[in-house]
Image (cartoon, rainbow, N blue to C red):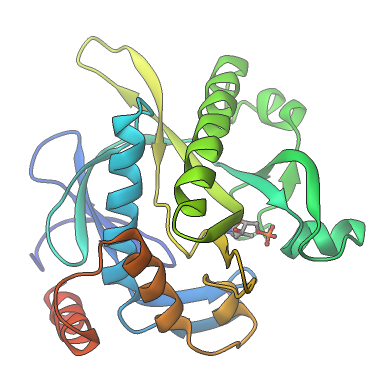
Amino acid sequence: MSRRRRIYEGKAKVLFEGPEPGTLVQYFKDDATAFNNQKRGTISGKGVLNNRISEYLMTRLNDIGVPTHFMRRLNMREQLVYEVEIIPIEVVVRNVAAGSISKRFGIAEGTSLPRSIIEYYYKSDDLGDPMVTEEHITAFGWAAPQDLDDMMSLTLRINDYLSGLFLGIGLKLVDFKLEFGRLYNEHGDMRIVLADEISPDNCRLWDVTTNEKMDKDRFRHDLGKVEDAYREVARRLGILPEGDVTEIRLEGKEGQAAS
Ligand code: TMP
């Protein structure tokens, strides 16, 4: 495992060469960053939980016909995914005002938005992921107009489906971030698929009755009980791995040492 070729290392995940051409192994770390890398830390067991949570959500999305890069989970911290050409755009969907939209427009956190709002950000750590418009995306060639149409319609379906799924377990899907990639088949045909991960790292999830934050905002704003929040999301989804926290931590550490 340690001799596998490392393709890319991001802030929360590592991508390794997969067992077959066209596949990659996505490894989930416990590392957490916020505010474009200015705040760094670790959330013990996060990689294990996000691997499970993302597996579950991507599988459900596949079931309703949303194409994704997910193939299968391999172990506690790794999943097999299709190798895709990542489109360098972060698609953010907002249902309720929080975070940067509250700051930018002076809207109180928790205010319901008149309708779901989609925003695009250009993926660049050096530039701090600036917000961009469709004009920038198509003029600079980051995505073609048809790619953007596909991304937008998939995003709306994902938002509808996940909002309902989370509401069913007492969580409000306040906002989230998606990434897409181009997947080519053997004939050279391309389709846009959901990539990256869906987890409390890139969603805001609030308890419907108490509005308690159950996501990475607990880390961003030092609210404490970060691990507990991720674990509670997994528990409500019905996918908490067998055994207690200690076991998750132990297996998590082994996984990390093995990489
Ligand atoms: P924001 O309010 O900070 O713009 O974040 C909106 C949503 O997008 C929130 O659920 C967190 C997620 N997000 C990421 O996953 N990665 C990022 O780099 C940023 C800025 C936000």
